[in-house]
Amino acid sequence: MTRGRADPPTSVPELIARLRDETTTGCIYDWPGPPIAACLQLPNVVARHRKILQRPPRPAATASRAPLEPVDHALGEVAALFRSCFAPDTCERQLYDTPADPFEDHLAQLAAGQLVGPVDWARSGGVRSDAAGLTAAVIATRPQPGMVWIAWLLVSPAVQRRGLGKLLLTSAADGTDPVRLTVTANTAAAAFYRHLGFNERSEATLYRRAEQHDR
Image (cartoon, rainbow, N blue to C red):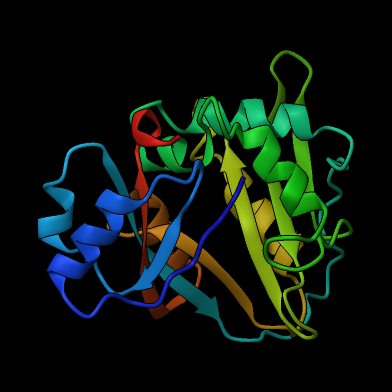
């Protein structure tokens, strides 16, 4: 996935002008603050208002972390799990999984350490069902020493509300390092993370031209 980052616009007209002029395939803007209503009125613009959350450091658990199945050689299954978690009309699918930029490409860049630091494979992994294959997965990275970043936490809708999300998060985030992640605002996932002790650190909005306008 090709990513572009621009300085925050100084006005709504400037933001709209930038979006109208954008023609680079896969370009994503990441700007601070909530979505601008005028921008969202433009046709074929995808926006994801997200919260950046952080959980303070915690003492390492006395129990050993849950054993997870490695996923470094099962990224295709992680992509399939992602698609089962998010419907085609969700902002996550429209931002991270398009014909020009499939989620597999995003995962490849993530695994190569090109997005949010190197993947910590020891803290990443999945849970597999004999019948359904990979049903839950977590990918943790190290954007900087002493920091854990949860890039993705995916749990199949068929097995949600059974504690798998908490299990994977505990395994990935066990220890004394602070943990950060992003989540789409005003969703059940946001409430889930807050229940587990995450607090809002900042907010940002991803804006992208819909694919039919990419060239």
